Length: 449
Image 1 (cartoon, rainbow, N blue to C red):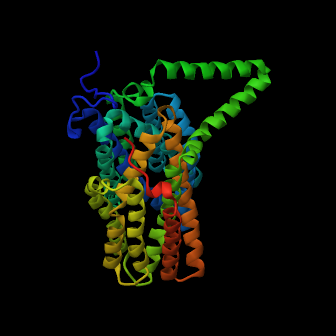
Image 2: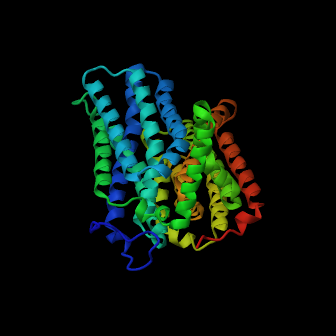
Image 3: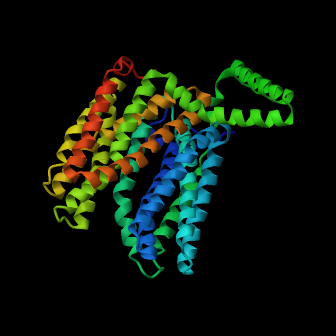
């Protein structure tokens, strides 16, 4: 008999419980929240540890770059893994790996054996695990809730992300200041958060059989089996060397399937181009704001509070998601991007930290609605058997914008005043919005049934 914790299948619309009574989803959300908060704490603690170890700000930034590169490299393979393996097992394995890596950092600190190579190796492992776990965890959310509650579930997930962004940095800084554990306290906190996430993954009882992937019917199953058999037969006809080459080609083509699916759908293609540009601009936004405020002799503490305005805006924007989603998806996406432009340009005005905080708050109000929009479109319009690869492709494309945005912002700050650099970012985003607004399929897109 199925566990009493099990929720009705995602495709069933009968006897749907309110989301707050969906034990499967809420347990999963608690694990996600713990993991996100731990990562937000670690994002502050790792640079502080490297600064204390090497005294180099550049090397402190190197950790984040290596971690981001690991997550980026794992995006496509992680998507293919999610389409082939049990999502719970992926989450359990990834969280166990992250907990062990972080526990190793704690041990190195306590034994005075911490070194830059150890930290960078940890960055690779942590980033790779994040790239793998994010897709599997997202598909678990889809399996835990019926389709009619997907928007509400993803909206609650926005509270998790923005809450971690708001709470994590000050907690990380405060814990690192504790000398009793050789500055290991934030890493103990982070390791514990991964363990909590692991435990919640062990508790839930959802998987492929609750998602659409397991409901394609006998003909779809027979077709998939036939394709696999044909592929195996073709590989066998080619001999051992040919079989190995064919296997490698199948793996590569499988990983690229998500990108091909995105490209074939005009709405998803245009939406992803625009979101990539927003992500690229947003990646360098904080560093330019920091430079603008430092030029006004604003203290580091007030700069941190000003940057927190964006996270507060994201929290305040989460309740607006159902209202904004009454608009057509293309209109919503373009409208939020247009809304983002005036605060972005006004940040160039040097009017102090509270001015910057207010503008960042305003800019972020519509971002939760856009993130949920992309998630809904991807999950509802992607073939069930390819959702992992499509999500992996989305994660990879969005991840590409971060190093590009950070590098471009650094170059702009080298050759232009900070205020002018901010106006350049606003101009680039405005051009992207105008270009995507010319795509009829995006403007006329409808929500999937």
